[in-house]
Length: 145
Image 1 (cartoon, one colour):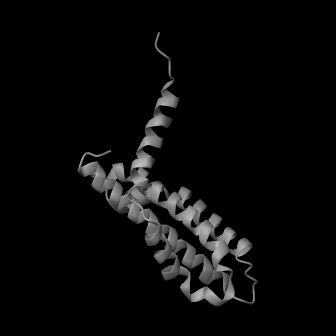
Image 2 (tube, rainbow, N blue to C red; image 1 turned 180 degrees about the vertical axis):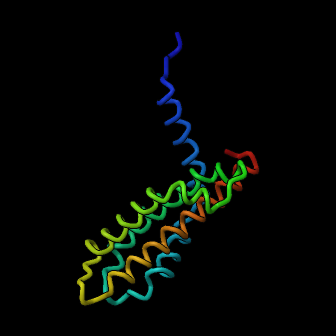
Image 3 (cartoon, rainbow, N blue to C red; image 1 turned 90 degrees about the vertical axis):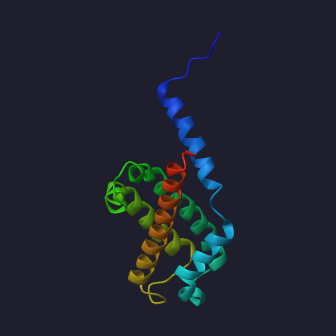
């Protein structure tokens, strides 16, 4: 007798399978390098070892978000219009990273400009979204999805 699986469960399994495939394209050293690029100028004013773990998590989330929306690029939509589709999700990631950075990095208002930190967080999330988008689109073009 076969097991009955709902459509929702099947979609979730398919999404997890795709995410696992996409995560093979990501390297921890690359993520750590981008952390230094984006937040390296803030070195003396926050606890890097604590913030680094969260930044890795947010990089993975942004990468997978970009990969998820790469299917629209495969079907002919531009990167900019696909990016507009997920602006709310990306904004939530940016705000969550900013909050994480302020809270766990022990940043005080006088130490750094909050606007600079927010811009760095926005840049960091967008870099990983774009990376995920490009790699996901490449997988779609090679029919590896």
